[in-house]
Image (cartoon, one colour):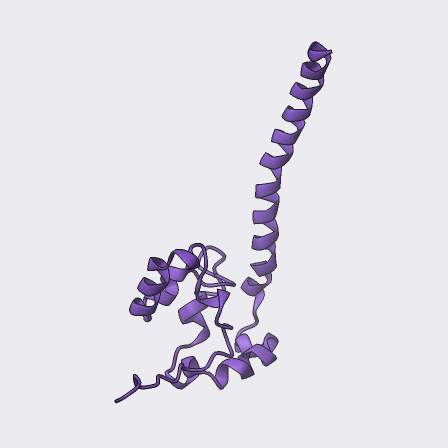
Length: 134
């Protein structure tokens, strides 16, 4: 009976291993395919041409008020290797060094990024309250 199980286990394990190895490239291809159309943007069009609702949200945000354009966070939309639909934590850290350092030092936040808690285009500035008694 054990020999029979071993004969079934080895092929099943091999099939599982091959399947797992083939999933990751497929996911990467899907992610890349989402952004191929950005290379085809006609001259004169901007992010707002296709992403009007997101652009309007961004326009009312502190990023817009401080002149942080789409390409600052998302990279060059005409280059697949430079474009990021969701910016990396290191991108946020270029301007928000203290906040990123705090996020990285908190074990609870391990694996999270700024957009895990803060909506990317509709965030508002934190209102800092003075400590009690001051």
